[in-house]
Length: 501
Image (cartoon, rainbow, N blue to C red; front, side, top):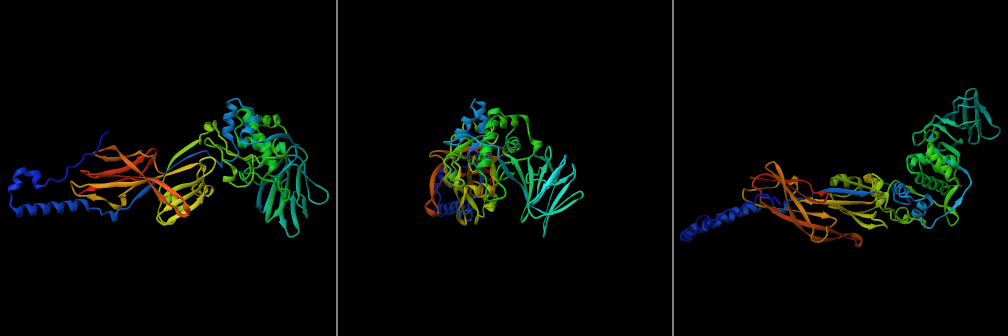
């Protein structure tokens, strides 16, 4: 392995003159010795240890995309590619479930709230009804609903009417067409009816048959090009999720966006996903005789998570399981991403400069349940979900590797010609015993490297936790200005430069 050129120590008079030095006078010997000491002091004290700082770089690697609880959609895709039937796929992801056939009941979808007005139309004649008899609205006439002190004001062509009860719009044929966009930014044709409810602002609610609702969910959640057994799996999970999320005490059951499951109108419907909905009509995963809350997400990275480590609660069917075919997903593995201590510590509200984000508790999978933010201002703790949100991570299955170097670039380290200086640092989390890191150095137009030994160390944290890191140090003697950094796998320290006077 190529190495940087090493300077020999500055020669003493004995090195230069050999035996003749023994014949020199005592005075000359004392002067030569004093001069050597002075030079040695100059070389070794050019950058006092107390003046040096350590600078870190964070390397972030992760697995999967989403919360990790329930069914991995890409994992289901993988199982379907390997010949699994949809019920077997569902039983893998939802522990201990059975199946039942349910009726095509109504799902109440919150399309958007906080509105000052709701606008819609229909290519066919349609009606609006609050309390009392329904009023007919001609085809292609825009109806606008607002809220007044007297109630719901509906204006549609020549119709001007105020309703005390929440007005419901229903088509005589086909589907209503929304002009006001939903929380997913969609408009156009929607099956079922649309109810307008005042709650703070106006809320636009789609009351739609369950099986029709699924036609607008499945092609938004997964690609219609997926294997039919994967599409059937998604249809059944979405069916159970909708039924398991019902809220009888409220005027609606589910959001139309990722707060529950994504749902849009007729425009997204596809023949392949429609076939999956029809092919599983009414089939619903159950636990103890009730529809399960069939949570799902994009991809797991190879293992799902137990719900108690993410949201808490007692859902026996939401256990962490192995997910071997999730590797079809593009985000099965992701990273490395580089971040500075400020880019990590700022969003996390850390005091001082962060040197490590260290996992102190994980779930059934390696996902972070609790992490220590270790820095110059002390240590604070954060849960995995908050960590993911604040740093914009794909999942909580993530490893933060922080690697430091001292002296840092900001120290402006320099030595006298012929001197040496020791580069040092830490890497969190600790490497396996006996593992080496690599020191890279650049001069004369190219990079070179050499291995450096590490030593495992333990750091006590508040609350009885400990953090393990590896420490490394290496003396260097450059003959000209040289750039340095340490690395280990995908992790890298910042670059520092040592100049020669």
